[in-house]
Length: 242
Image 1 (cartoon, helix red, strand yellow):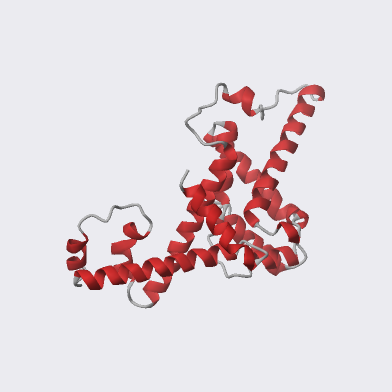
Image 2: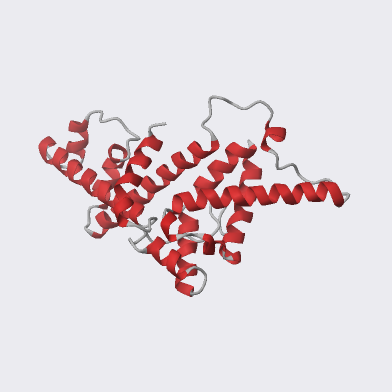
């Protein structure tokens, strides 16, 4: 693990064939392994978010996430991915559930026959009374997935703007683009960018359109079927609204 938040090095933004390459190559090629590593790196946090809801313990969630991704990257679990289930989001959530189930079975076997005290992997036993103010694990996974997709779309768009010599402008309006800031006094912001209000508003509008396209490209990179992009986009925005 290279950082506290991610199991491998950060990668370049997706291209639209990334998940397709993983599904086709499985573990039979270096190209497939590299594509899988990129996907795991990008979508590490949704798995942590899911496990944090399951175990109600941040440290346990991180530890289990590291173990899960280590097995995925070195054990070839991607070979179970089926073309007709070509959504990396669904595959990843199903895989982590399967992994946790196997870990629980192993812990129970150790309790019964090993004479050793195993760490509990039973979320109901470990967590006590559930916090009804929090999203269920599956919904939290989807919400973090959506946030990850938006963040990666923002990263890709910023890289484009920097390449065009407009990185400073992107940084000035990023809060508007990602919804983390209210529109506020955009007249003052326009002036600080040396633009008229109308020109500023048009420039922001264009960036919003480019951001949506960037997000769609990111989503497409996690799908087997390009025709499923719109459905996945609707799922993404629904998850953000929770």
